[in-house]
Amino acid sequence: MAPTDRSLLNELSDTLAAIDRAGWDGLSHVARARLDYRKWKLIQDYVTRFPVVDRAHLIRSLQWRDVVEHVRDLNDLEILDWALQQVEIATHHEAGIQDLRPHGSCPCQTLLLRHVSGRKQKANLVLKWALADGEARGEARDQTE
Image (cartoon, rainbow, N blue to C red; front, side, top):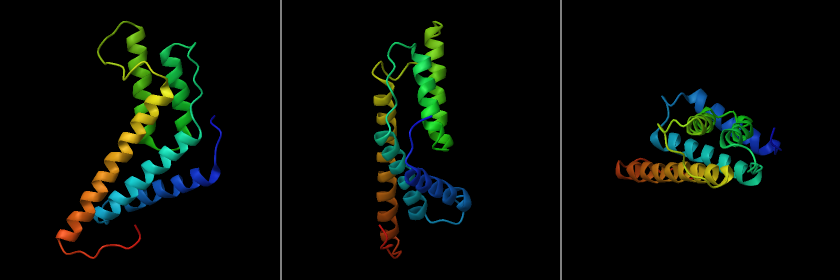
């Protein structure tokens, strides 16, 4: 179990609950994009503040299992699914099955940060597009940014 900052986890939990409650149906593109960006920002804050302990002496699949346990506290299925995929890729690779290519041989924390950073960057670009699209359609811009 990773060390935790309850306020950070609570804020992430509130964001995930808002996403679940909304079900994406009744929300504008901007509201959806804003929630998604907020989610990835909070996840990035968490994995930056509480890094995965590098245990390089373990085989790669066990290192990724540590990551799975680390991100499980976040209660986000998307990041958990990604970490579980990394376990599967590493397990296959160790068994000599080359069906999926590992993301790299650097520490798992580095790869986790790279993935989360990429997801946050994508969410930010979607938010910027949604804001620009809303302005182009003449929708009022929300001042809560």
